[in-house]
Length: 242
Image 1 (cartoon, rainbow, N blue to C red):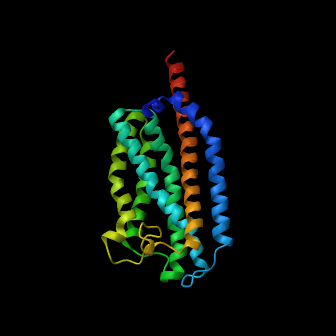
Image 2 (cartoon, helix red, strand yellow; image 1 turned 30 degrees about the horizontal axis):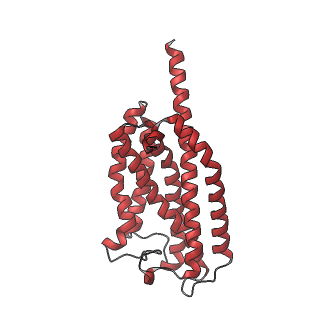
Image 3 (tube, rainbow, N blue to C red; image 1 turned 180 degrees about the vertical axis):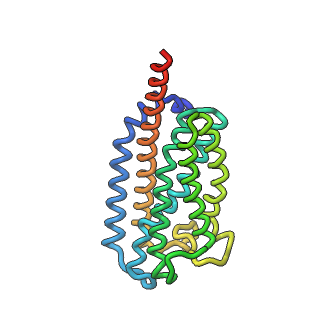
């Protein structure tokens, strides 16, 4: 079975209907387990105190804010190359979800940064690129809404998505490109010396899994809604033409 078969809206709707309940249940399980474990059963950090617990919201949200844009980029490229409408609708469906994750990361980052840095905001390379990514999310959503022709909107938003990917990349690797800046290094790394302590690391992984599953669940739900809206639009147009 080819993956391109899921570009067929009917196949996508049938398959997503079967997997959605399982994804939603797993997302809820991981989120509840990870957040309760992290917030109530981990010790205070010797430097950051209880503030360290923001990591269980901030890090997964920031990761998914960037990865959501990457998913939108892949879906947009598929649209531009293969002209599969489901991929364009999936990119559109992911944008509000990614925007929400970006907002959560910005807000939790401010609450985390204030006691650590003594300020709610700093024009740090990673923070600045993350704020620009947030603005690109807003522009992407606004562009979809501003253009009536859905294919033209998909074309233009795909181009915007490719441009915004530069800032998604900078949001992820800014601390590697520039040595200066307040933002600390990665909380998760292949280098064990850069990872957070295991007592924080394990529940953090559970929270990340929950955020990933939540993202997939919400994108599937929103994509199904976009497909239904497109079908309704075509039906109304057909009625007007008769």
